[in-house]
Length: 274
Image (cartoon, rainbow, N blue to C red; front, side):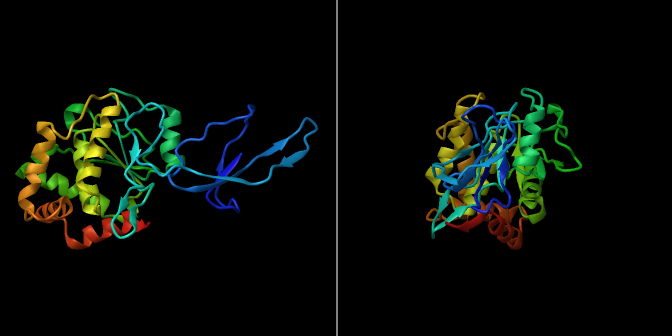
């Protein structure tokens, strides 16, 4: 079976050796038109090709991803922004760790590398968590930049780490990027909020994205928690009260050394017309 966003099937997803009358397809882009057809051989080895059919995936966010062995995997892309723009899908993914409390399977590795085309594994864990590369380093660059989450972002010892993290997002050659900590909730949630805010996501959407980690195995996350409120409190001084969270995030990043061209590069990579 071939599935493609192109009716000419120039670069399709290929599913082989299907023996049942149905087949599960996962990790498609949301709000996207797809074409599909079946190629088969009968008992006499005669080749048969079906007509081309089509379907459109639902546009609701987030784009949850199925990667065997790990959890809390989702795409930052697909969300709408002002001015008829949206965050580009398939560029930045977030997840739990890949070894330790959970362990990615060989199939999971194949999904990340061959299907989702991950080029950079951005690991936010500290040395006590024994971080190491899990994906094939000849195909995926592993970068370990330990950070602390929430209100710690303004501490002197954390500022350089966050600058390094956003330098990765500013590098066009790094995409697609997968970033993760342990559960993908706290450190991962902090990075996701800063990045999404920089791209122009509104506060309600930022809160929803943070709280979606409650659906994983790592426990409840609430925007009313002391942790989340400490992050908002840390960002508040970086802009006037009338300014939105996006301006606060941009000013914070500028204060730690993320230059204007890097911010522009991140937006070029991550934002598309809606």
